[in-house]
Image 1 (cartoon, rainbow, N blue to C red):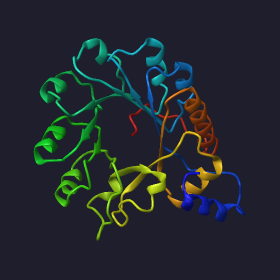
Image 2 (image 1 turned 60 degrees about the vertical axis):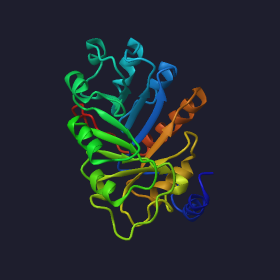
Image 3 (image 1 turned 90 degrees about the vertical axis):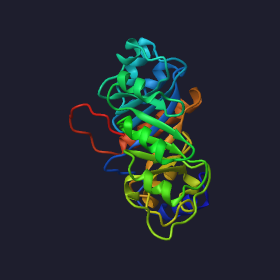
Image 4 (image 1 turned 120 degrees about the horizontal axis):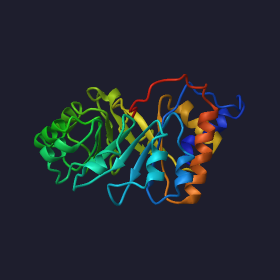
Length: 263
């Protein structure tokens, strides 16, 4: 079970309609390039965002073709920067790079549009300047502890920010500035106890095997929350595929639209 609060909500909803109906959804899937390409490709649907961990900058052709089917995809890259690696990126497939030790000027000369930056530790004014210089599409920040008021003030200037704390965040006396534009990524069991009163949007970590009743209860309890799963092996991929099918089957068909890098 995901947690006592979610189980209680499931019981409260037991007498209601069984069919999950959503106006839309956003599911983030983090996986490694070694996962079977067909299983990975089976997860590619509108509303599903892929975060692909890699060993090298060059993807196999079969893998590159499949990641282009996701709503958007972020592919982990690292130096050296080559033209062959750059050619893999499209308006829907973006590089995902760590800020630590990054030569910002060299990366900017190489990078296509739409970079996602991984930031770990203290958010100083100097590091903020480096990240802003990258003109990133989004930032994933894992603070070392509870961010200070100064760090939250700096964080409000970052685009597409996800904050992924290593533990529970303390409550806020008042909402954080621009908190509604910040996604707090936390285990679903911590949804009620991490950063209460801060006003963040939520990105909730769930197991790939989460059941339909639990998903239904979760999205009723936290409207607008995005979901996050990690896929480590074939069993996880199969379970994640069932979750994608559940969410896709619970939303109206998407109208035809141009490709974009939705995050």
